[in-house]
Length: 245
Image (cartoon, rainbow, N blue to C red; front, side, top):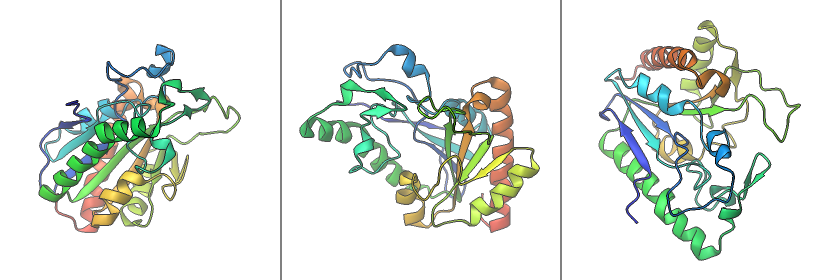
């Protein structure tokens, strides 16, 4: 197979900004049948709603480029380590994915087809065009079907693992911009940070992990506001840290 499990927006340049959106697409390859109703592919279990649109808006600024996953996370979750069982999810938010009930050889083939080339190419890109700052862009549902009583009021979340400097600058900036900000919410970057652990932290590249709330990132007004403020945030953090961008 010759699938390209990623899309690049803009021109990645040394010392500039790079957006990484692991879950930007809900596309399913024609030869893969997940065995679920098509309506689920429009929902949050299939992708991070709004990420592709916000990334396109931000990359109108030539100092930004974006590296976006090309297929649904129900095919392969690119923000999981290759040996994580959830890399090919058996279920998501209570929805069973029967098409992912694969044998070992089939799982290996799926990972080799999508997961490995995505991360191999990203590693090469970062080596050739090391950015000053990475914006890891995701979005979250305001309410899980499997946990309907678990409140998720934050309008934006900031996630990080060992590298905290950029995120600690981003949080008050976003609060001052008028967002209700979750610090390590709605979940922790200590637990869900595979792509940034591998490509940012391991290479000492500053990054900010952002989670946009999907009822806001799913419409044009919310997308425009996220794009504007996240662009300003990246410039502010870069200046405060003395990074070239």
